[in-house]
Length: 251
Image (tube, rainbow, N blue to C red; front, side):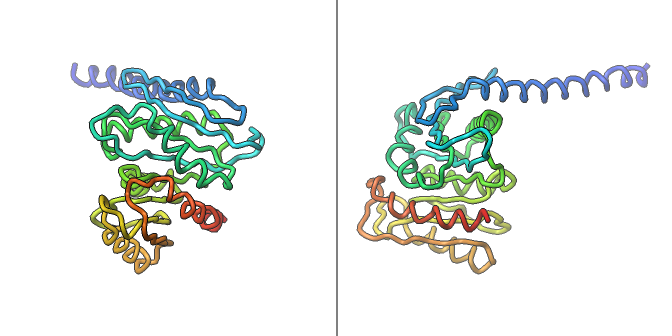
C-alpha cells in the first residue's frame, strides 16, 4: 500500500511543480504583454498573484526597437524613512539615474520597495519578478543588465549583485554601505561616494573597492568632495562617467 501510495503521489507532486513553473512564466508574460513599447517614461504597477503589487517607473529609450536588444538598468531608490515608498522609484529615475545614464540607450526600470530594505526576501521576489516581466516584454541583452542605486538603493545594489551574479553583469552603488565582506565577489563594481557624506561614511566603500581590486575584480571608486548625502542630483556627473566603463565591461 505504501509503495502504491508513493507511485500515485509522485506524479502529482511533479505535475504540481510544473504547473507552478508554468504559472510563473505565464504571470511574467501576462505582465510583459501590457508594457509600453513607445519611447518615454511610464509609471506602472506589476500585479502578482498572492503578493503585493509592485509600483515602478520605466524609461524606454528614444531609439528603442524590438529588433535590437538593449541594456537594462535596475535603479533602486533611497530610503523613505517611515513614509510610503510609492513613487520613490520614479523620483530616483528622474533625479539621478535617467539623466546620469541617458547615453547608454538602455531601458531603465525603477521599482518602489515593498515595505523597506532592498535586501529582504520580499523585495528580492518583487525585483526578480519585475526583471522577468521586463525581459519578457522588451528586447533586452541579458548580458548587459546592471544594477545601480543611491543610499539604501546603493546598498541594495551591492546586495543584488552579490546574490544574483547570474543576472547582473555590473553594479554601480552610490552613497552606499557595502557588505561586510567581498569574499567570492564576481561582478564588476563602479562605486560613487562623497568624502563628505554625513550618513554613509566614505571609508567602508573605499576599503571594499580596494579589497576587490586586490582580488582581481574590475572595481573602481569615484571619490567626490563637497557633496552631502542628501544632494542626490549632484551625483549625476559622476554617474555619467559610469557609461563608458559599462561599455568596456560589456565588450
